[in-house]
Amino acid sequence: MHRRTAERKTVSSKMPVEPTAIAIAAVILANVALAFGPWFVRLADVGPVSSAFWRITLAAPVLMAAALSTGWRPWTTGAGERGGTPRPANVGLSPMLWFVIALGGVCFAADLASWHLGILRTTLANATLFGNCAILMFPIYGFLVARAWPTRIQGIALLLAGVGAILLMGRSYQLDPRNLAGDMLCLLAGVLYTGYFILMARARATMAPIPALALSTLASILPLLVFALLLGERMWPTQWGPLLGLALVSQIIGQGLMIFALGRLPPLIVGLALLVQPVVGATIGWTVYGEKLGLPDLFGASLVAVALVLVSRRARD
Image (cartoon, rainbow, N blue to C red; front, side, top):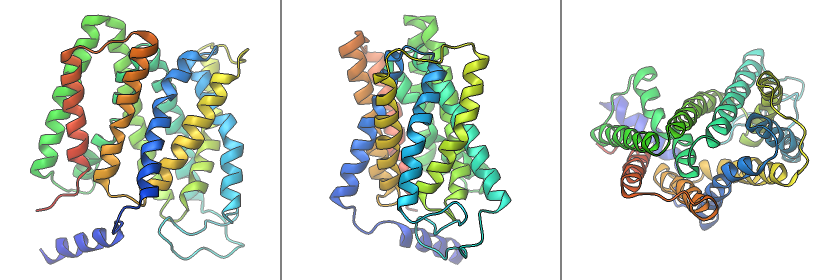
């Protein structure tokens, strides 16, 4: 009992005392920016995995420059997100840390490849919704690895998410069997993103977030190139606009603002802000592609949305 109380005090002490307007604006803008990713993928005149390759490749130099501008150097680990003691200047990243970052980069590459393939096979609303299911999988990770049983609220959230996901995928199949395949690919992307986040959380224990993101981005380039070549996709574009938009809006602005906000906001606000993505994605899909949502779609999306909010809350027993 005393141990659990101490653990909760430790977690609470790390949470932001009062969310700032800048952090709230950052997380909302991050989700708006990330919601435009599927649209850019559809507009690109290269294959879906190739567009993921260019998203990473074009963004990597900017992210590395941003990491170096913070004072971080590749031969040092640097302080963690919430402080810590940096290693001496002549001590580099440990082999295990390099391995974690490299594996995280591979997971992120597989996540983007699966998600981009799914984007072309389902609606923009479902692509953004299922691609962000990682937030629902962290409780499962905690239950199995950390041996923490779900609270009543978390159990209800997982049940609602399951029912909503089944309803959405069932509706997708009724409208077009190809949509179900796209939903499953986007769902797989969410699973892979969960693995990426778990690995990068370990890296961020001793590294600042921007250097960690920059290195994992670099580690994603080669796997995405291999994936695209194996699929025989067209690699070289004739129109660079959508790919530049994908790199700038999704990877640099979206991911950058999200990382900025994650350590400065409580989970509830982050979970609420996450709902911006499917709303913006559905709006783009409806406006540009005529992907109208029926009542069953809205009901299923609402169940998943409620689950996202519930599971983002810290348990208060």
